[in-house]
Length: 84
Image (cartoon, rainbow, N blue to C red; front, side):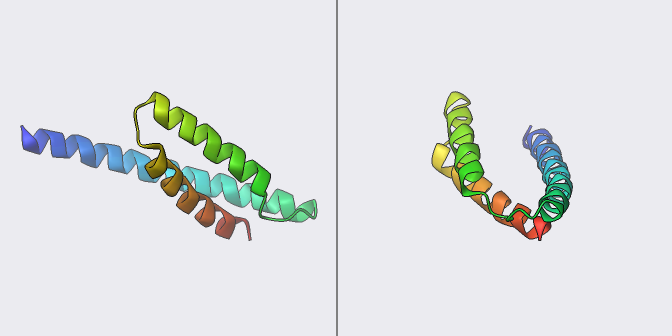
């Protein structure tokens, strides 16, 4: 039983990493577009909107919204690095 559950977690973890990698690739493209259009990497208004949406979705899914905000703040920090 526990081995099967751990395999499920391993599968979910793998999916999460693949999605993060996909997000970073998209962030690089956004960074190139921003550079070409003389835009700043950091868009605090956009980041606030993303975090608000994440918090709402987390609550609907019964995921701790504080946890989700912390995770996505880290993801956004890494996304900024990809955009430079």
